[in-house]
Image (cartoon, rainbow, N blue to C red; front, top):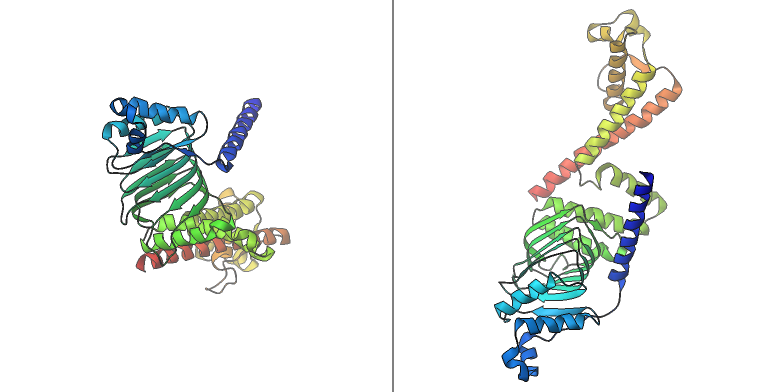
Length: 370
């Protein structure tokens, strides 16, 4: 079992190294002439300029270096379909696609360049892509879906994408219009479990996308880019700021998560409860022990139920009323200084997590109202 895990680890490491080499390659791709130019340049092939001949030209060029095929809106449909079919069996190529009828779906490919224009639709799965760009006329309606893809550079132009879905994978570099410019998308944006490279060069792009998504009230996607922006700024901060940055990230994902602080609250509270329950570390004050009143009678005793109840009351008191400011003390206290110190740390963490939870909820509703 250990050997299999180690072999799987090394295979993944080798695959990531190969992907990194492909992404970082500086080789500029070649371009296949547009179909209209190809037919005109090779006039002797006018009668034989079939889809097979054109795609064969592309395949021949690919043997030398990555070559980009241009599928413009004026290309005949049978040529377009032949090129898309050929792309499904080739590798190490590039595509520039446009037009209403252009739709591609590729998986397990190395792609040097992908440009989507006008109303084209592209879906990539488990692909390694050096560069993806969206261009075209104003208010285009392109669709881009990336699933488990490693992208070197993602370049978003204004008002180009009607649909942008990125699930898993990673993006090394990203560019987007400034906040005062038009947003790069005008429809659905869905970002899930994507690794966004936390380099300082991406910080402004993350800030731009957060602004545009917040203006669209897409708070889920905006939160992802807000967190990415904070991680990108991490290395530029002082040591003290880095420490607060890590705590802020761990407890609430920079104020954007309501689930994470809720989980941390229960972890800290349950940890404190289990600590005192397992070692029977809570004592009852003399006043309560001599004359218990009402529910305090359940605190007195040496059975498991009394021990658990004392631990629960002590935990809740430490979290919500540590200084006894909201009424009388509960009549329970730690039996030793080390236990009291451990409880202070755990309950402070629970209180902090609860504060981050309220802050995240307030921030989300405030953004929604804005």
